Length: 251
Image (cartoon, rainbow, N blue to C red; front, top):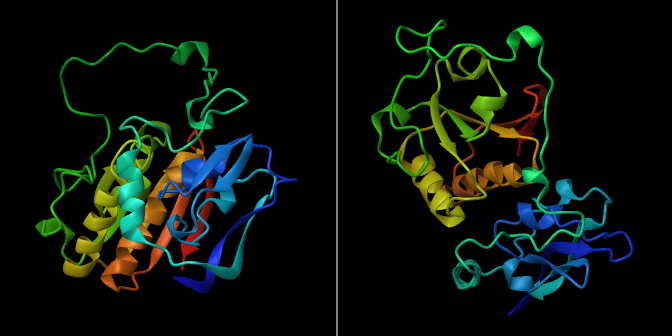
């Protein structure tokens, strides 16, 4: 059934086929075909525009037109039919997923190598107040989620950002996950249950600047929407060098 709704439109003249947008589409609605990004089926595109911010050429925009209704069941079936280890992106003409590009950072000679500790206490206090921490392992009914300020962190952030405990974790419940390698629908369902049952007061998502990370706030927001909740939510983007690049309120 066709309805008038919001959906992604791609300008072929501006699209260079880099594939960044496909990494941000949790539904797998975008693919690179003949060197250009395409919406492979209207019913797979939710029209929320998570892919737009990843386009370096401005080829993507949200329009309103007659299209098949968004179909979550079709999305689930589509994702199940793809090979288990298949990336959401087609092969990149410029050399693969930008999230996997090799970078080497310089270090001061005196800091190049430090002896590994074998015993003893850490030099700074941990602010972690619970266990487990992985999204897939935390039950929606976990007592530490009750009326909590929730910090949802991409797996790579704690390695890149050294002050995670001091600046973000203290006083918050934390959940870690990777939107690229884990089950997106499982995440959405988990956050829907958490938002519905736990009385979460606020959500802060902490992600790395790479394209695949941008899917994490999207799935958290989808879970919140399914739960019918309006919880204050913020997205903070960290560079691969550990600098805060942006802070955005998620509406």
